[in-house]
Each structure stands twice: as structure tokens, then as C-alpha cells.
Amino acid sequence: MVAVALCPLEKGTICNVDGQEITLIEDIAQGNKFTLKDIEKDQPIIKYGYPIGIAKDIKK
Image (tube, rainbow, N blue to C red; front, side):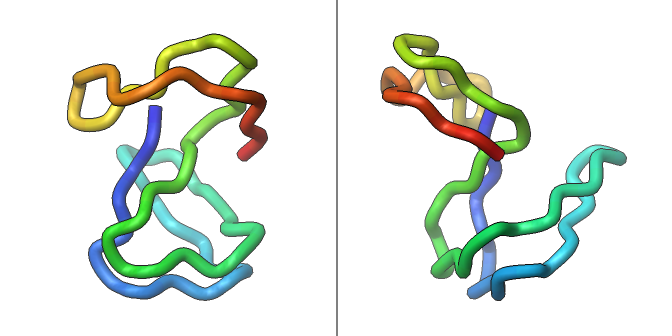
């Protein structure tokens, strides 16, 4: 599952998404996605409830 940055976000920013706190490990440009949990290789990436791709190996 991923979230979309509605504005530019800096590394170290703490985001609260549905009650879950995520600390960003890199800068995220406006409109780009960031993961809310680790996504293992070959698992679907979900955005707005729909699969948008297959993961290579993504860590939050």
C-alpha cells in the first residue's frame, strides 16, 4: 500500500496516514508515492485501492 505526497515532503518528515506514523527516509516530490509498509518482491503495489504495478523489493 502506498500514499501520494500532496506537497513536497522532506526526509525525516513524520506523516500520519490513517493513524499510522511514517518517517520518510528520503525527500518525496509532490505527486510521488511512498510506501506505508514493506512490500516484498513480486507483490502488487496498491494505490487508491487498485494495483498499479509489481514491486521489485521496497522497504518503508
